[in-house]
Structure formats: C-alpha cells, structure tokens
Image (cartoon, rainbow, N blue to C red; front, side, top):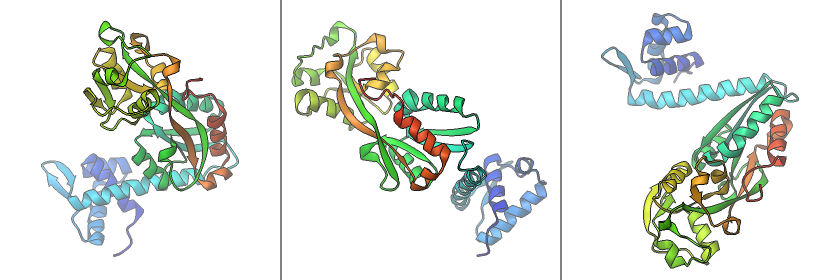
Length: 304
C-alpha cells in the first residue's frame, strides 16, 4: 500500500465530522473539488470505500469509521507532540496533560491547577476526568503527562509518588426513619435501604469491614449508580444510606442536609498516588506541577 499522507487523514477527519465536502473544504481552507479528490486518492490507497451518501449527508462506511478513529487519534497526538517540542523544556511555557477521577478532580486537582495557572501565564493545562481503565490507557499511550489514581490502579510503567490516603464516611438522611447511632450492629445497619456506587461498591465494603469486622452478605439495596453526586442527592431525598469519600461530602452543597457518625467513623479507603513518565523529570513545567501537587494541602484525608 502506498504511504498515506497526513493531509489525506486531515481530509478524512474533516469530512467525517462535517458530513459535507463543502464544509470540510471550508474547515481546511481548500476547494470542494480538492476535498473530493483527496478522498478519492485515499480510497485508492486503502482499496476500500470510506464514505457513502445518505441524502445530502456524507457518512462513514464501517471501514471508514475504523480509519477515522485511528486518523483522529494520530492527528491529535501529532499536534500535541509538535506543541510540546516547540517549547523549551527549561521554561514554564507549554502544555501539560493531567488525568484523574471525577471526584478527586473536582474537589482538589481542578482548583489547584487554577492556582498554578494564575502563577504561570504561559502554562496550558488539559485536565481529563474519567474512569480508571480509560485514564490508564491514555497514560500508557503517552497522552497524559500525569496520572492521579488509587494505588491499586497505578500503571506498571513510569514513576509514582505518594499523595495521601482517602477516607470515606457513612452518610444518611436527617430523619426519624434513619436513627443511626455509633453502636449500631451489622444486622441493623444492613437492614436500612442502601445506595451503592456500582454493583461492587468497594468503599461500602471497606467501611463495613472497618466498622463491623466483616462485610454484610444481605444488603437492602435500594439504588445503584456510578456517581457520588447522585448518591448524595439520593440520600438527601431520604432514599437510603451510602458510603462516600469525605472530600466529596465536604465540597457538596448538600452536606448540611445529611448526617454522619462523626470523624470517629471515618475510615481509610485508598492510598492515592501521582504517576509520571521517566522523561518528564527533564521538563521543568511538568516537574514544577508535580512538586506543587505533592506538597500542597489536599482534601483526601479526614485531617484536611
């Protein structure tokens, strides 16, 4: 197969996203006929049909969809790499990409990043909030400079440094139906309607094990959701009890409408680490952000 040109991949992405030869031409500042010819040449090189018409729209074929995903990823990585190498590694100017979970990202990383950017005006930060597996893949493919996750989810490559230990706490509605005291038994506790984070709620299990010495086998499950924010809202509406990270509770506008068993019932859950690539130690802007995130106060533990 003849080599595919970068400009042809740019054309493929533009047509796929605009669904129009004319709009793709406007995006790339070339004529519609040039777009059409570029697509035709790419189809000749790949020996597959990449687009089909659906009325006035130009849509990807199944083969075109696969090439589009690859092309978009390649062009994004190419742009990021060019942007990076254009900046002096000994200056604070340039881009840094940080990935972490939604909860810790919103309660700590995002506000801290804003502070750093106020100090260094030439620094651009791309903060990606997501799930463990997606973030790990991005880091392993060098699309993230820094990764903040629990120790159990740390990548096998790169270096890591400890941040702090996350704590979790039980929350329940402020109502007579949920008259929960610190001396509650496991059987009494598991009888209450319960809100879980996904089906296998590790925070709930860890909290129960620390509190009762074992995990309940018969839970009165009322609601399963993969969002701590939705869990907080459900508890505030009287739907049941839940276990969430203390830093998520502290930043919530609902915290005054909920009850806990106090600091004595906050338990350690996960040790969080910051991972980075070996070569990042030579880049001043990355090293500086690492130092700031490691040394600043963070809301993970009950002590902050």
